Image 1: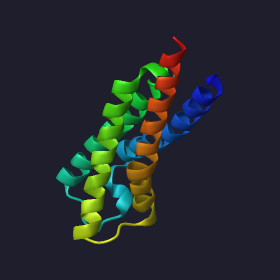
Image 2 (image 1 turned 30 degrees about the vertical axis):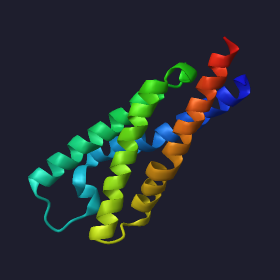
Image 3 (image 1 turned 180 degrees about the vertical axis):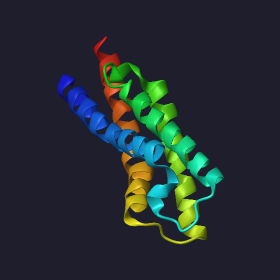
Length: 132
């Protein structure tokens, strides 16, 4: 039981690196990272803003790690944010076309990995509650 909790904590910590590192990269580099021939200031501003939210999302998930078995409501809220973002990405794929590999991997993270982590966290929380 404690071992499963520890393994979940490790998986969540590793998963947090994705939004933290990509969010930080987006905040620092902006939309220029896409090497567009013309970069409207509004697009760069919006991209950096969303990257900042993504960065904070990673930190918010990381804040659940120490007592992950007691963080169900926060974990579900953060997970729902990620899933909704993934649905938006899926809509883009359906209407505009397939994105690059990095965004496809993001879609897997958003619509597969995070929901599985949410289910796992709920399982660990139930086990912890049963011990009380």
